[in-house]
Length: 158
Image 1 (cartoon, one colour):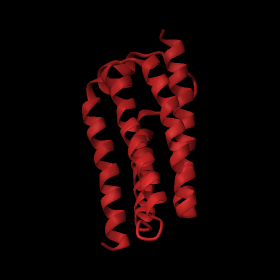
Image 2: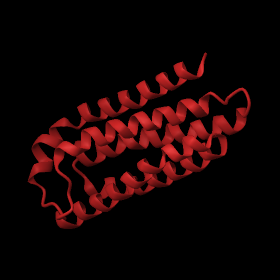
Image 3: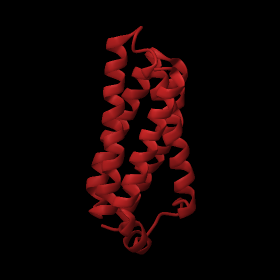
Image 4: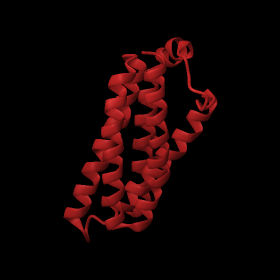
């Protein structure tokens, strides 16, 4: 399988996970979230979709580039893609905890674990393909912001 097909598969996978988690949490985003007290730095709702779409595409490109090295660095790639899969699952789980279960505290605990898994994926990807690691930096920054936002939402609405 060539590199571009691997990238396409990984981008499609990431976008599918994002889409499915948005469907699973739609009622929470439409009915519950607007009723919460929000901090002054809460972004407008319209920003989340383009930001997450961009991040999912960047994640997929990064993972596809790493996957492309499987024949050269088999064990490193397997380890890196395991961390990638874990963080992607945790990414989807956060939406379910926060919007689906409407539990900001549980989501806050989970997003800290998610951040650690994203960081480890960044480190592992960087060992295989430096550009793949760099593609994870905006994701790390956004989830850092999301962690602060999640904590603030929990604190203001407890």
